[in-house]
Length: 284
Image: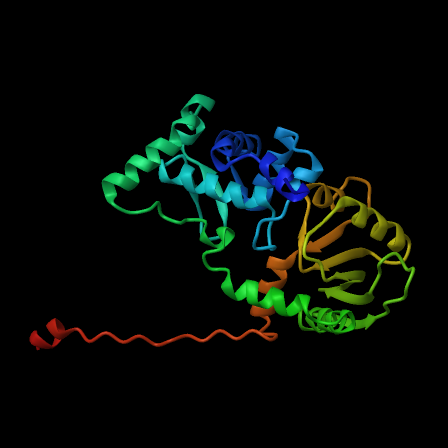
């Protein structure tokens, strides 16, 4: 068995993550985003870093993140959770009462639903699970094939379009991974931001965050790391650690969404669909 296959086999299956998802939502006050659920589950279950960093086959998320998406799907199928258009998951009254034993029966309950309804469960977390990710996959492939300096220029353009001024790419070797600097003005206050660009296929760990923070000490107000990959749970915790300079993180999926919203290399085409209502005319 290859090393990666061995680690993959140690990642909990979706049905083993049903109750941890419920526990995480309870610990987070009954509602949470995907990222908050992921971090809390990893914390409560004490998953080793190497397990947290195992990548799913799509290379845009971790395997745990993918399997948690299925766990949320099954929980919603039985009415234990609900989600809003803003990606916030909430425990229902039924979900609040679920025990570990109850969660073990959910897969068979959903299979019975599928059989009786002659259809698969509603794919309520399709984006996380990859059903609508083809354009992101294509975009990430393009970004990964860019030359390092071109990716830095893209990040520079992205920050300018997002409202930064005086954005400069420095890219000095041995500078702790700092690739550039920019000024972000919010109302009457300006912040100096140092940024790092990482064309990366895997998961960025906490050591990268610590090294970057060390390099930016005394030189800026905030830090920003942009990657085509993902950030481990430990990396996200390190980025917001109490008493340390805050570092904002943009992973591959968020980067794709930003490029889409700013219309940088991504265009959205809306197809007009017309319907003629014959009954309307018959009433004239």
